Length: 466
Image 1 (spheres, rainbow, N blue to C red):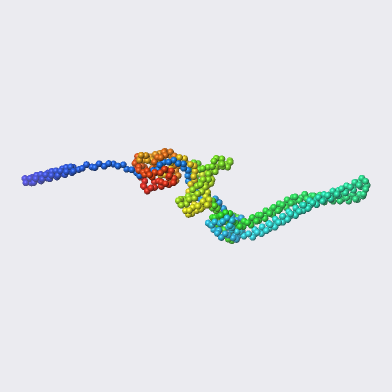
Image 2 (spheres, rainbow, N blue to C red):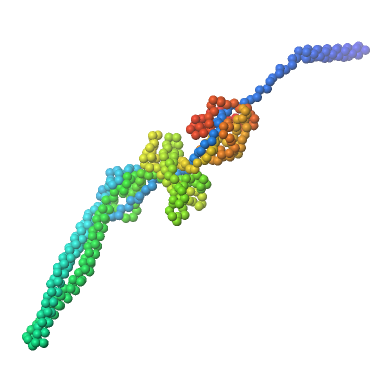
């Protein structure tokens, strides 16, 4: 009985405590709800993007065809001795890389054998001249004698005819006198005929003597030329590329002992895509090439910019487009020759001159792109779109790209003059995004050619993903 009362009392107390806790929670919740304030109203603000813009302006721009090539001298001459012998003299600066002025002796071969040959040939020529002079003198004398013999023959014949006529018709004189007159006439005639035959042979004898003299003089000239060839001189202001000759060395026809380069004109062989050549190159008017020649007409000799790829900023020169060298049917490329004179090659205040072996970028001006809009290349997307600013909003615009050159693109359709084109580089911007720009800094797009706007997209702002 006592145990039952204790259990009932415990249950009552537990229920009272639970009820008190619930009541306290309700009171606290009511207090919290009563003290809550409504959230403050926040006005949403639209974000904007700072950009740089240019005002679209039409201009005529020359096409710039870009190719690459290596500088090479136009003349590279291997030197092979033509007079064999021992080298007895050599230029004191005959080393690879040295430049020997035109006309100076590079090396000399022992000339003694060749000097003796010249003396011998000279004596033979003198002998031939003497023979010819003697024949001509004798020819003149014999022709004069021939005239005398003609007169003697006529006199002898007249005397013979007179004596025979007197003896036969008038029986005057003796037969012995007639026969002696006939004998004298025959002797005069034989002497005349023999001399006449000799005189008639003189022209052929003189001709043979003249040919002999020519042969002797040719032999003398050949000996003198061979003697001259013992001295090898620089054919131009020659840079020594290779040297394989020393004093005392025996040299002769065969392998070259020197290779010389003429650096007065350097030439680049510049291969171009045939499409660039077709659309951009300036050729002379049709009909100016050689008649009957199925080849490219002459190109206009336009000035070309030559830039060393190792230092594109500091090293640049001016060359001239010279000609079309060849067309490669395998690669479909047209190779052009661009020449740079020695004066232009040295004209570089930045330092090094243009020299053989430098690999350079060649910029060749071509046809004119008419009425196009110049933009930074990076402001045009890969699918040929640009972004324009209209009423403070960004709008995409499809355009027709006529050509891209360096870091610029030239638009021939899709933009109107005076439209504001965004040149800040943006990545996937949302159409209609609000843009902010400095009205006082807006320049025409044609001013991008002179770099007045700086490098588009390189103003220090990171690419924006809108």
